[in-house]
Structure formats: C-alpha cells, structure tokens
Length: 161
Image (cartoon, rainbow, N blue to C red; front, side, top):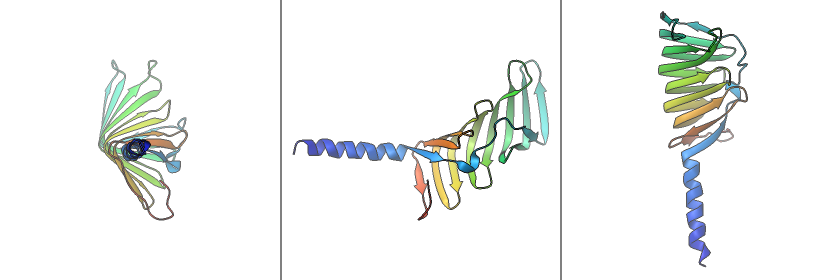
C-alpha cells in the first residue's frame, strides 16, 4: 500500500508532462530545403557590411510547397554571402502548406538544417485538428516537430495529432 501514493504522483507527473509538451507530425510541412527561396515584399533594405536584407510589408516567402507570410523578415546570409543562412520573421507569421498551417508572433528558419522555431501564441491547424502552445519547432526535412508551453489539443474523432 505504501507504493500507491508514489504511483499516484508518477501518474500525475506524466499527465503534467504531456500537457506541457507534445510531439507532432507535420507531413504537410515537409519540404525540399535545397529548393530555391523566393521572397516578395513591399520594400527591401540591404546592409552589405552585415550581410543582411530586411523585407517589410506583406512579406511572402515561397520554398517548394511551403509558404511563409509575415510583416517583416530579416534575411541573414552565410559567411560567403552567397546563400541564405537564416530567416527571422515577425509580425503575424503564418507558415503554411496545402494541408497544415501554423501561426505565431515570430519564427526563425535555419535554411541549411530545415529547422523552424516558432514562438508566441503558436497555433497549428491540421485539417479540423488544432494544437496550440507558446513554442514550436519543426524539422522541414523530416516533417516532425514538437510543441511546448501549455499545450492544448482539440482533436476530431478519427484525426491524428
């Protein structure tokens, strides 16, 4: 009988862990990270010395089937200035494919690794299923990810997380 309280604590701890983080499949956000990146915006400011470019106003970034929209995107180029290293998006960020869409306040996309980190009131919609939290990481190469920060799921019967 002494182990019953310990078991109850373990079950409670596992339940809390599940509520704070959730592994997620993003098959619709899987993309070819070697594909060309196309950026359109209302304006562009370039700083050659820093190796950056800032796109502002109705920014749309397209890479394969993936679309990223935001108010502002700072592009950071690699050391040789020939390839994009990172994209820092802010202001109503939406990352979408044909089947999945994720919204957040900010996002950072490391192009070489295919890693996307979204922060601030993250909302993921996959069909009729909805997942929300404060922080989400996505691996665009594998189509997998993780949601953290008071995760909430609304799953439809027969749906997958």
